[in-house]
Image 1 (cartoon, rainbow, N blue to C red):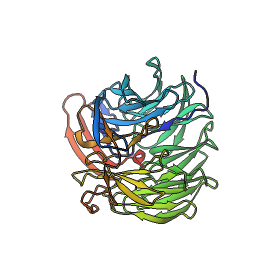
Image 2 (tube, one colour; image 1 turned 90 degrees about the horizontal axis):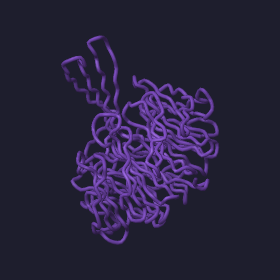
Image 3 (tube, rainbow, N blue to C red; image 1 turned 90 degrees about the vertical axis):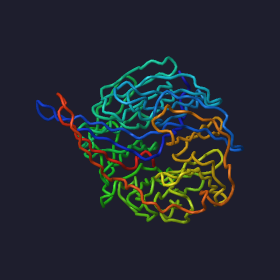
Image 4 (tube, helix red, strand yellow; image 1 turned 45 degrees about the vertical axis):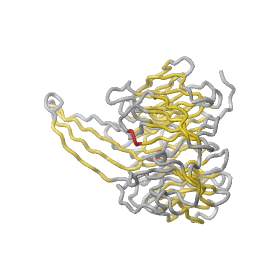
Length: 457
């Protein structure tokens, strides 16, 4: 048993999502089978901050890198991979040493795993699934044992860990893709689900009050959930029709921030009301909070800028320009820098990772081309960055160890010195295709929803 009070460091990803919804019409009648597949990545690069050479390539156990978490007790990283197409046991979890990045173990889990959330006391990992496998996996990395695969209806998305209740809370999508719920899982026990009247996108925890906030994937609504209650305690409508990104909690003022349309909506957790709309750039990712100055950084994909918002005035106080197609930044608590992924829409042949210093209020430079297409993951043991890359999508994932940032110094994030103006797909663009399948399966209608993952932001 581990000492209580340790804090896990979440290194979840923030990238573009592709969700596939499958409706199967059988010869005996109409039945529905739904699947959500998150577009992952197939290569992860590790970059230090003093050179620019590849140190090693580590083969990972899956075809698409989904996310990860750092365990400060063991100093190890746990990375999740889709593992393949089809089946509910094709997912993989890779354990690597945070100090050496050497692979330690591979675990099999359910398809398209989400999370994980870490129980810092036991060291167990809680994983959902983007596929509709109706399961939550509880993995003991020490023994490799699956402690529980709890029956949870629908697709449980990335969870949050609540230390007060000792449970992981999953926003789940119903099989008919019409609504969802919040389900708590603690060890072998499943806490009764709390209904959500819309399709949830993500869940955020206020650690002081223990309240959960669930954002709508397709609805401009936030549901307020109190663990232990049978129903939501409040519903916050933000107006308009734009979907929401991940909710960012500001512990200094207790407010929540989320991207919505070309604005950032501000929610008071004291009154459970929307209190401000902050205009930013086009197609923003959800804000990233800097605790040293109470500023929030919002990457605007189609504007080629990053807006800097003061949480005290709820206004834009600065704009970082010349950042081609930026994604949500990573805040490095060790050195205070921001790492901004670029080429998020694939409009650039190269994809540098921009390095910005909030203390100096200037761009320091960027990493080599091809390594900045997704928000990086931080290894707190070494300060290294694990950078997912879409370049080899469909191949076996490779963990590339590279050293360090910025490789190119200067006041621009773009090798060309100009921002992108390319048109990109919006967050709710639908592409519909129809295919006919013979046999008992009958007709299969594929509806593909392409847009930003709320966990991208």
